[in-house]
Amino acid sequence: MTTWKIDPAHSEVQFKVKHLMITTVTGQFGTFDATVEAPGDDFANASINFETEVASISTKNADRDGHLQSPDFFDAATYPKITFVSKEVKKIDDENYKVSGDLTIRGNTKPVELNVEYGGTQKDPWGQTKAGFELSGKINRKDFGLTFHATTDTGGVVLGDEVKLLGSVQFIKQ
Image (tube, rainbow, N blue to C red; front, side):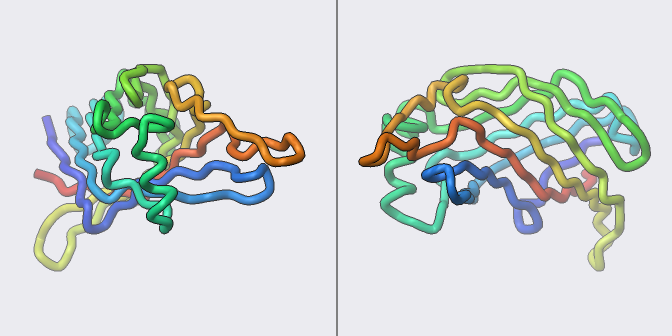
């Protein structure tokens, strides 16, 4: 079994959601951890465990970040972590995988599927073996209890329901 740990200094975990249905707001989490256990150097049939600290959310706007941590959204005081545990890692071809698993946000666990592109494996200048991945997926925020709703003066929607999940991550072979 090969163990890989995420390299947070060379990784990003982001989300995107429509605001007023005319632009997209991007947020990211600054504190996260992940481990991959793979039967070999190939990541097929691996198991993945990921968690992030809700309080590390950043949308480059302190007021919005505070609102996102409030009970209107993530309720960071009650639910301080978001977690993902894989159920299946399926190799599609040499560069693409489908990862399915359980995502837990605000105490609500739902199945999700992520598209993962394998960028390759390299040794860094310090002799560590690193593997890189780009991942993407979509969820409906309301499925996870993120049901905050507001409308504009004309009845328009302030916040979209679909949330795009994005990650650019490097893992270090242990």
